[in-house]
Length: 137
Image (cartoon, rainbow, N blue to C red):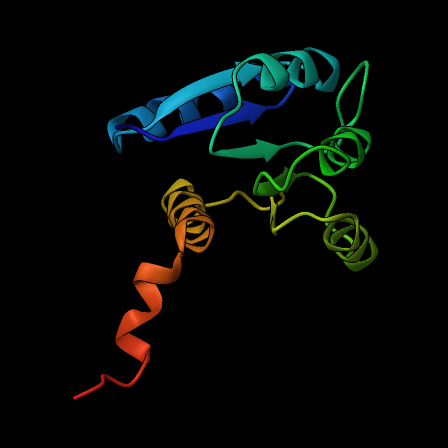
């Protein structure tokens, strides 16, 4: 079954390019232009991971993340033009799982791999850890 990624950004160009790249990699994609519509959509159809811009109309990414963290441990990657260290620290302290800066351009390929890493972490279960346990003879 395909995993679903929610993209939340008010920049239509970013939504289009990321959607195309993720669909090419085999993911289903949900897109939202603001935090308010994303909160409604994510509640109705929960994705496996969300990529969230911070600066958005109606509800910014930080507020969206706060509301999500009250209800879910959904992996969230901030993708933002905010590039100060304090912004990255705040995002991580609020509960973001990763932080990617748009400034200076960003690599879609690297973002796709960061998404895969977060999905692997999310899907680790007891079966995956059996190889780490000593076997009984």
